[in-house]
Length: 306
Image (cartoon, rainbow, N blue to C red; front, side, top):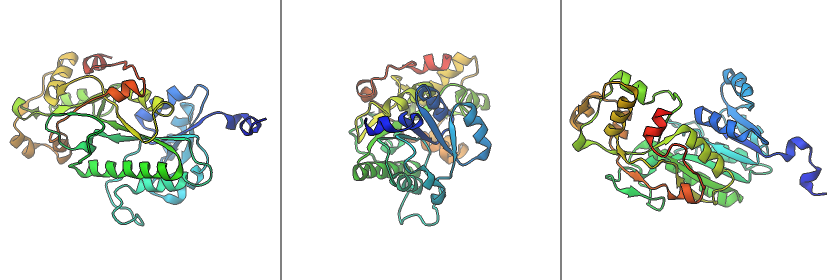
């Protein structure tokens, strides 16, 4: 009898740990549950009942508290990491570390038996502004915001950890997520009347429906080659203002006002301005060829209608 066959039934099943089990994480959990044991790290006791109701085993712990993560060692055969880096420095973080959360989790997972696979959800913001050019995964990252720099540091942490520990690590670079009533979506922004840039100043943006993103995350846990990154985006090629015009027309709402970049600098938040300062169009061939994902919503008009 093999060692696996000698284990109790509850340990023979794949055990998938989701770290950062918000909206997308719960969608992933729903896809994973048949035949698999799904665990989720949460720092909020209030979410325990919600996770259990979704068939997920909640594990209380905090990425900003290394000691609380020690119980994760040896628990999971596969890990999906969707939590963002912090926006502040943490006590005890190594000098220059932009993402102490990834370092803390990597340390915890490196103890005892390690997972076979880890998928990290990064951002397409690691490329910075590409002036509207088409971008493949081979383009060297050059983040222009602190948010992008933190994500790139996290990518490096996980790639190095995977090579050192012998764990297959996949990186998913994710653009704007929409769909399924997500907070802060196009409808909410249109109802607030948030302006967009006028056509000469507008930027290309990329999108993925939350359901397609969840399906990509789950496939990457099994299908994606180690130490590879892939863009998780649909086939749309839209400027930001055109995206919100399309959403307004589909929802029967007024189109957003158009303003110049100079006016935007005086009216909008620094976070929103940062998204309006980067223009790129992502290739998604790896998503289709390597993850073998057939998009349910290949363009935003289909996704917004859904």
